[in-house]
Image 1 (tube, each protein chain N blue to C red):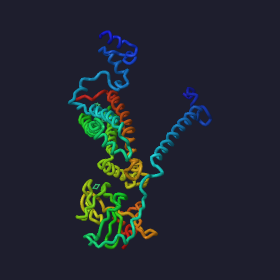
Image 2: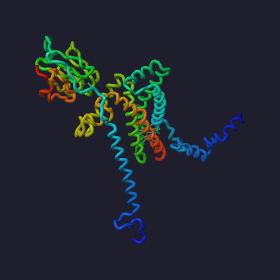
Image 3: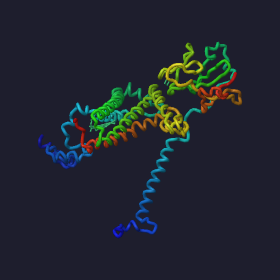
Length: 250
Length: 180
Ligand code: HEM
Ligand code: FES
């Protein structure tokens, strides 16, 4: 057994992937982190206070965890869901009532989204209460605000996809607010556009919630918004490290 | 200190060196391309053809909207739901006029329901309520239901034009109703 293990861990394949073993010494630990594209966002040493759950509430961490869950479950849902008016509702029903484990998958995705909105807000609250937004972390606060908006937009765009009554009217109401956008909304103050070229039209791809709105929301929901969110999360985590790690209790 | 100036800074007579010119041209081309692509992308989001139902439709002759029913407290004889599903329009017959009411709640755009027994509209979203003539009396709705332009077309039928919308202040406009 030991021999096999040794053979494997000393093979060229293994070594080409894992360069630095598990030796628990400062230099090796640093190399482990530094040479890993994912881990290098992290510091290689964590100060003890960073693990104090009573200080961080781990709400940022939980938000990230939920985001990963959404990515995985969402990807699986995409195997059955078609974003066209003829099929969207039926595919949702199909997932719910016939596809094996579809119902749990769909519910994890839905509840995960709700939970993520909650945890991101609690995370913001704890950053505020602990004063962690103060210099040098003010840039990360701004990145965080954008991440909050992205989280809400992800929920909003995902809400339309089941194409049921709730979805349709929620997005009708939600997108009608865009009519009142100053300058760029056709019913807003100082409007310079009409209903065929205002922001609401750009969002819906039409003058009402219809087939093009469904497709646009789908593209935003599964591609554009997650992509931007992933990039900003990388910046967010990188900046925590660069701003001197998690802030500490006074 | 003038002697130590870099050769690039005092290159040509016009005070711009070859290197600066090339850099300017390069960045200029870059940002022009970027800007034009950006404008193109924004334009891309607004298609030329919309696959939405046509904005005008005929509902029949004014004589078709006769009724022996008694008018309610708001002069309304009846509300027709015939075009609600297909066109989002209610046809309302008042004692002396006919008009086409948009089935869009003036709060945030849901479709209210018509309750003939009570003679009122109720919105399922946030509870706005309207009388049979579309005037709001409860809930967050800020104004009565809007009306579409109606005219008599060449063949004598009533033509509803959904591209023109009238709200409360314009209900006197002769195009917002048909006199009968
Ligand atoms: C998608 C949403 C977000 C994710 C996944 C996320 C993730 C994280 C994680 C994992 C941390 C490490 C500390 C912790 O777990 O509490 C953190 C820290 C931080 N977050 Fe977020 N976050 C998000 C949104 C926000 C928002 C909305 C704000 C505020 C506007 C914000 C501001 C910050 C700041 C300033 C820090 C540094 C805190 C410190 O050093 O104590 N983040 N974030
Ligand atoms: S949309 Fe009708 S009450 Fe809000």
